[in-house]
Length: 200
Image (cartoon, rainbow, N blue to C red; front, side, top):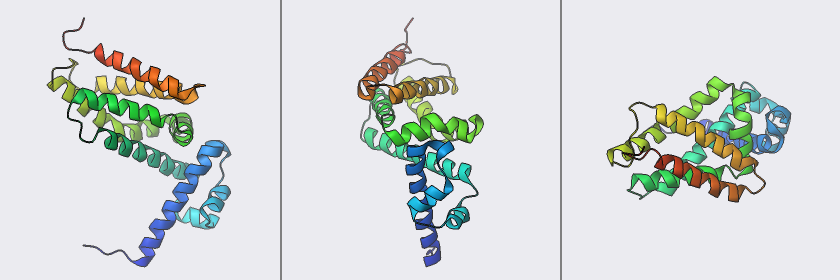
């Protein structure tokens, strides 16, 4: 077992504080308007302290975005824990995602700013890292249980992720996000029902 030095522990705590401050500032100000100075002030560190951990604003934004992704994964996993039926797993997971889209920090950072701030290719790479395997595994479980019939490979999972991203944007920008979340969740369920084995 490796024991971390006090310097390493302090560095980790400082980095976490900077990322938390970045989430707050990017959520409030957006990527373009947020500044390293404001993030440093919020984190209660020097500007040089920020640059000690991050090369610049884009790298810091990526860390904030990843924190949003990891929070979403944790909340989905918490929501589906103990559920055995794959159909219930995917519907609960969809509801967790859409609920997260109602939150201001996730909406601003993950849905609105990330594709432009990171570039589409990097944004997609991170999205796939966290969610493509999860969605594909759930779809595979639905196929194995006889619920749906889809082609092998990850095309269906990629198309479903695209639909979920658009649904999330609709929820995030709606005048009544809660009501739109319920409508979007119902529509995604109907789309999945359309994949039922023997349908069509």
